[in-house]
Length: 306
Ligand SMILES: [Zn+2]
Image (cartoon, rainbow, N blue to C red; front, top):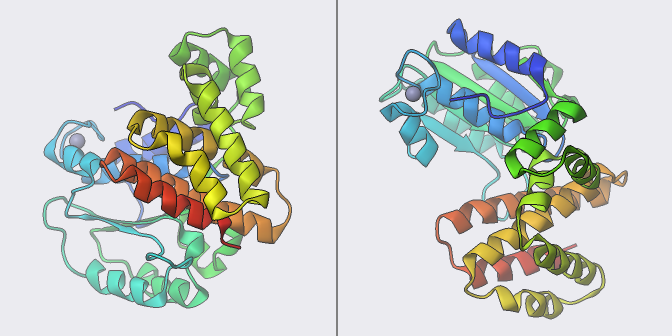
């Protein structure tokens, strides 16, 4: 499988060399801005760790396939539990004891803590214990918007990959090749999304992007002043149309990412962060055939919570 991110050549080389040499460290921290690719890179390294073929990750062996489907028994995801904003010390204690159990299928057992900056200080301290003496077969992959929120003792045990904004020229070339649009249009779309490649592709590719953008815009406006009922009324036309709903979520994600990146208020920032996580979670559930009106109702609730 080819490297999943563009315009970050140095990180690409470092990650590919690390995988080719079969030297995936016990602890990795990936830091990037919102929509900057940290979860994508975490998935890629995880796949390489559980791949059973020679050229890792192949994307085709049973290890890779189970990982892609989200069913690999040796891959565990740790995120805040439902209705919580933080990863608790108990969640970390559970994985610490699980870490000492040998993997079932692959040579490595991978724990993805995404987002690791949601760990409480106690949770980080609990994790530190296992990072100090990691079992041979374990890999921890942590993601964060900034390494500064992690304890220095954790950082000192992690190999850190920082995903800077992609080089604009390479990003524009890539976008223009994927969307078959002119490079100037790609640059324009990148400017609109403050450098988010996924967002720019979304703007250029989707025929219905105009409509979805309008919907997302009125949704965000209503979020500021309106009631939950107003928000639900805006989402009503989506009802049973899954493709339109996904387009709407994509458009909303781009707008939230763009606002979060330009935001200097910590309170507002935390709120955007929460909304961003809800959107990515709902996008995942939509692909798994989750009920659309249930999701949009939950979204309206999340958006109007202060
Ligand atoms: Zn494989």
